[in-house]
Length: 224
Image 1: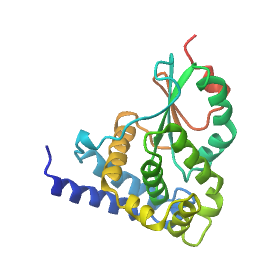
Image 2: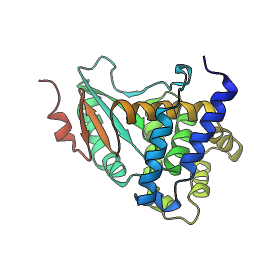
Image 3: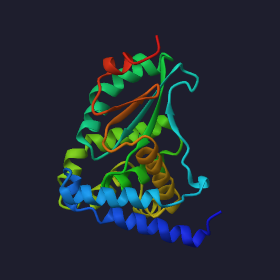
Image 4: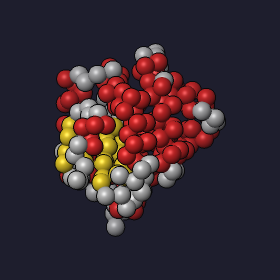
């Protein structure tokens, strides 16, 4: 197994690369952001993250459901917000709650905001799909104000204080390197195995679709 100190140092280097993304990348993809994405991907590819840091899957619905939907999304992505607000509630009611499909929720890191918010959601939401979904719902409701604020990092922390968590808990979570490592491990899988390069990305019964989908289009891909 990799030396713990060495691993933590490499992890911090990767985090620094992500922290270097320009503030404007919170509002859209710039050319510099694309270049940093390439550097980030190359760094992830060369980094060996021990399996012990792998995060537990967040699954909505019955694990034995006949269909599988994997959803990669970012809390700073406008299309992801639209899907969560306009499509996901109906999708859950019609296809998840009825046992037609299960849904894997997998965060994708494309900027500092998505990293810190994902750390906080996982830290406070644990392995509860319902709790995690509720936290993301609250974040998406405030997404425009958050990303349009003068200090998005400060605004994010204030959001979670409004959600009922105290400042000490929030800072402790953001500094949780085990969760950060787990998110990096998932990012490796998304970028290297599934070639996820944008969000939202859906994998429906093994078939990858990049970009926005409606409930109907996802259901059309289910096993007959």
